[in-house]
Length: 273
Image (cartoon, rainbow, N blue to C red):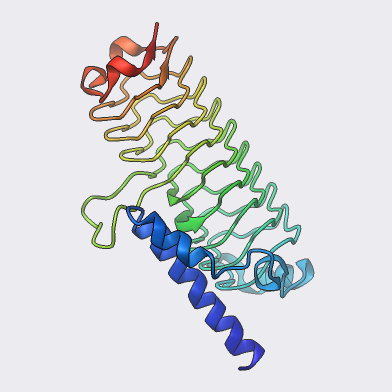
């Protein structure tokens, strides 16, 4: 098998693992079994096939239409400050890549691998991260207003991140392959702006949401077990059917204007004032 054929085969395996892990979260055993076939320390996952200069030339040639970087291996590169507006990064491998302050408005990162990538202060307005794997990634101070985020961001840092009007929830009109929504287990969302965001059925277990702006956010059916919402702003937030087992609901601002808090599951097991 040629190196190119091996690369294509490995890429197909990566996409298959993502599909199992994210489209069928009810079958974690199967996903873990598939993950055993992945070597996250392999060159395919840790080494880039292009240099920063190569990427700059491709971006410049593409212009406003957006460059096609789909499937490219860009792990470990420092691409900070570059303009990826409307770029196609579908299935790209960006593990450990630095994209600090990059302009990624409207970029497509569907099914991309971005383990421990650094998107600090990046402009991701209207971007799509559908089926993306961004465990441990950093989005501190980034702007994801209006973005579609339905991937695994477990353990990610989103301190002060703007997610205003972002769509992280499950679209129940299109779930034929399983429940697709954002997974933010143990994520740091302290002081993040989630006002008006769709967080329905999102997994926020043990997430840090202290001081977060959740005004008018849709938390219907969200998994908030063990999460810390101390001091969060919740006026107009919808808590219908949200699981608040062991959730810290202390010092909430605008609680009297929250919707459906009495219909939250396991409210008697939450920590309240």
